[in-house]
Image (cartoon, rainbow, N blue to C red; front, side):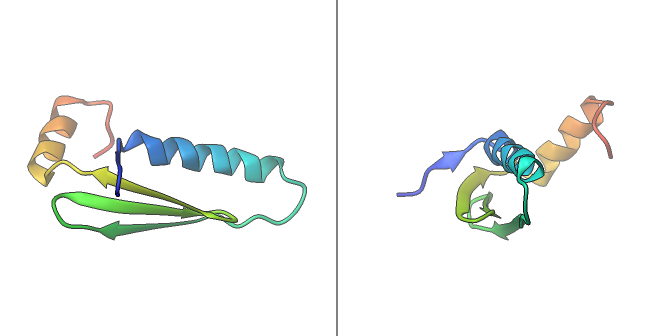
Length: 76
């Protein structure tokens, strides 16, 4: 059973893992893979000692372009 996450969930996990690595007294490795899935979804896999997997719904490109055009604070 696959659970869909909001796009913010992987970002929060990535930020928390990055902070943990900075506090760690030794070597750390952090890697991110993003895979395209069917039905407008992407799988985000974060590797940092173990795997954190997320399936994220991605809006169509038209919706993304309209949202960035209406919000001038977003980078192009």
